[in-house]
Amino acid sequence: MTPSDTGDLTTNPFDDGQDGFHEECGVFGVWGHPDAAALTALGLHALQHRGQEASGIVALGPQGFRAHKGMGLVGDIFGDAKVIAGLPGRAAIGHNRYATTGETAIRNVQPLYADFVFGGLAVAHNGNLTNAMSLRRQLVRRGCLFQSSTDSEVFVHLIAISLYSTVLDRLIDALKQVDGAYSLVGLHDGALIGVRDPLGVRPLVLGRLGTAESNAWVLASETCALDIVGAEFVRDVEPGEIVVIDGDGVRSVKPFGHTANRFCIFEYIYFSRPDSVVEGTPVYETRKRIGAELARESGVAADVVVPVPDSGVPAAMGYAAEADVPFELGIIRNHYVGRTFIEPTDNIRHLGVKLKHSANRAVLEGKRVILVDDSIVRGTTSKKIVEMVRQAGATEVHMRISSPPTTHSCFYGIDTPEREKLMAAQHSVEEMARIIGADSLAFISLDGLYRALGRKGRDASDPGYCDACFTGDYAIPLTDLLGHPERKPALLALNGA
Ligand code: AMP
Image (cartoon, rainbow, N blue to C red; front, side, top):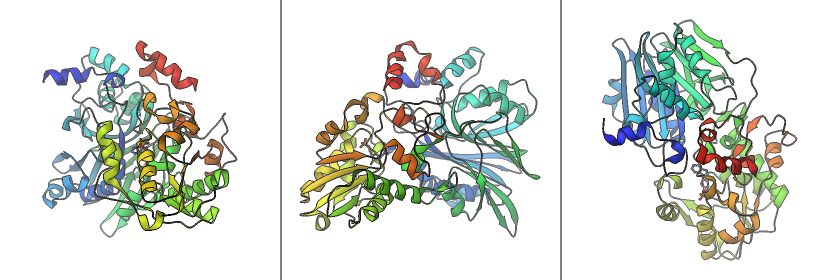
């Protein structure tokens, strides 16, 4: 083990000099299909938007578990048929990882695999554990040897040291000790397992793939990954539910009793793919409804509605239809460069925005433009785009955002910078408008967002969604943050606004 590896083992993610957590992931699993690994690679393709840094597949065949992992995009890692041929078996799980900076080592690429007294177990995790550092310290003191710096590895050690005998009981024992957001898929030689945390913050769906040669089950972060393999959507895995899939079918276990639902509202706004249906609600339609609400709340006279592609497109369509203003593609996105957030420093991120978007002068010249985007995080994108649109000859630029102001960091699995870097945490809406150079700026209200999701507004006693990034209402304890004295002022600030 190198000295830097040793350092990583005790690294506190809050003190890594980076922008907090960087885990946004996609998970996929198949049970009972002769092409399990190939299907998993396809599923990971459909989930590529959830993580572009690394991918891995673990398959279970007659000769046991085989794994293949790599850094980069799914197509680069699993594009070679020989790689898939080296992962035989009727069951497999896979993982896409998104990590912008910091620890990008191959040892962190999931699925994680370990040999236990009961046999092998592979685990893939989407989400973030909020007491991972505290658990890790305790586990290291007890002699556990961590192989990666991911929070997900605590699951492996908690399962290993559990005094229960069955895999399921050990898993439940482990789950009861962790705080945080998690959708997990696990594979051992007896079953494929899917788990959602008690509040169901991150998504996980169950699908069925009946073919001539198989009657397979599929688990995936989003329904778009079921569609790509031709699987039929069965249902969402419920908050706090464990599904155990084996030769006898699907068994449901609910070790946490009744739990409240706090599904991540940002999945609807930005993160999930628009063709996915999450928690029974189509993402695309929801984004259009958010756009329509936004038009009702903050309409302004204009000649054209222009989305910031791609994530602003459905909301801009909804806005344009409601406002009865023509929808035009005034900004063209280059699809061959990565997401803005992949750039590691502010300076390069700046350049990245220019690489990614170009103004379509024919649509913008001499026009009063409403620009629609899904969120303002640091403000880099909006500032650049507004400038670009003005340079292309727009006479007025009105920015409309299909989320409320992002005032708080996410600790449950969406990559957001520390609070000091969130533009809306530091500035009023008027100040933000001035900084990004827009003639006006408006965000959808919190109640408007909930109306777009079919509610009357936000019910503070039971919101039904996790909206901590807009409200600071953190439903899962931020144990590591609280337990770290020098971070306490930051936490007070987080909760204070
Ligand atoms: P910023 O330039 O920092 O204000 O970022 C805002 C842009 O980043 C918007 O266009 C969003 O579509 C996009 N965005 C928002 N949240 C995320 C995220 N967690 N990961 C990657 N991109 C994001």
